Amino acid sequence: MASLPRRPHRALHLRGPLSGLRTLRLLWSSPAIGAPVVARELRTARLLLRPYRSSDEPDWRRIEDDEEVRRGLDWPLRTVRQVRDHLMARTTHTVLSRPGDLLVLAVERDGRVIGDVSLHLRTVAAETRVAEIGWLQLTAEGGHGYATEAARALLDLAFGELGACLVTAVIDRTNLASARLALRLGFRPAGGTARYATFVIAAAEHRCGQTLQAAPELPEHGVESAENL
Image (cartoon, rainbow, N blue to C red; front, side):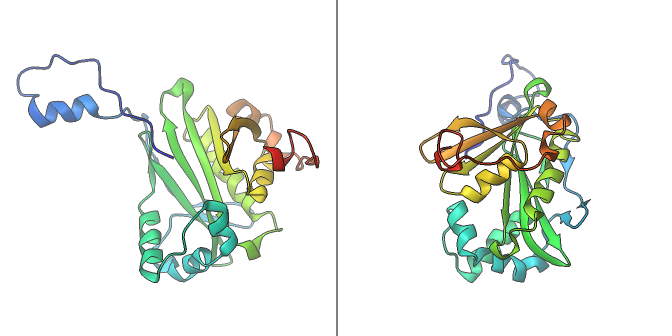
């Protein structure tokens, strides 16, 4: 999804040394949060969340080769060079400061990367700060609660250090596993498009401990079922 459009500052009548390219950069620079959030290691009961490294390439190749992962994220089948480039791009996403910034943390279990979690900063005003969360995991590692554990740790960061008021998750409607994970985390359906379902959780809901509750039962039919989100 595209980042939010940049808005010019109000001060349009600048003169003197602040002119030319410097003026244009100031006018069109996007707002930023007061203290940038920089990627660091986060530990949970069973996992280590950390920035990607170039040495993760073998594990990353396994993720890219996972057909279920590619289908859920609508990724193409990449060449060896494209897989390496994709990983290297992920190693650069380590700071949240301005709208559109992306932070990605590899999820490590027993020394192997089994997936990742990410935060996309959408808006920065303290009163309405919004981030979008994402996650991916090797299909073979499913069923153990790793994705839930990792995503909860990133929600703690989003509502804590980042100071988000709201976190969203945008999920392909055919990706039922991710839809169920969102519900387990305490997200609620909030609309979307014909292809994507949007889920939201507010800071107050997260603080109330709703994310720690057991996974809700999904009805087989009706508007609340994963098939109809």
